Image (tube, rainbow, N blue to C red; front, side, top):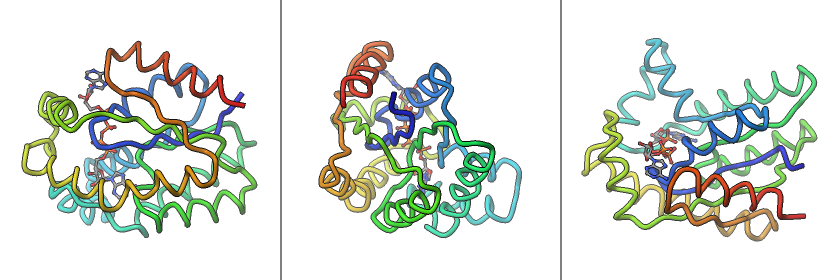
Length: 189
Ligand code: B4P
């Protein structure tokens, strides 16, 4: 069974929703860089202070900050005897993907599958407006979609070339999408 997974897709595609559920069912470490950054903001740490304004504008937090967080968690997981993980919302650009590749090579834990959640902009925008987080107003959402297209979407080709990409239609109910993701993970050799 594949248990080193990465979820890729535009903001609002439901990465967090699906990742949380799947990680809990399969006993994987769920690593959401968005959640980890929001926890730093809530705790008022120096890192949180640096991230807060950037997130409110819908831009990407610096690679160095995000990488430090991810490295910490993955090294701790490897040291505690391994086990699977699910990366949600990371990497978000090519530099992060390259750094992740190096880290996973050091840990001898290569990615087994990248699930790409695909959804139309109109549905994404409506979901995020309904969610209503502080960075979920229409202007910021549109900016996040632009940032996704410019910086994150190139990862689709990056992981396709490495034979890891598995697209999943992310429209429908949470249960329908969970079933599609399960098939994508278990149905690929
Ligand atoms: P994230 O926290 O990653 O959030 P997201 O991409 O906006 O949402 P996601 O796709 O997880 O959707 P969700 O399940 O919540 O990023 C936030 C910010 O953090 C970024 O803009 C950036 O500033 C920063 N950041 C994070 N990672 C970074 C990194 N690696 N580098 C730099 N910066 C980084 O679903 C959205 C809504 O839809 C929810 O309300 C949900 O309930 C609903 N929903 C889900 N599935 C549904 C369904 N099937 N039907 C109807 N509604 C559904």
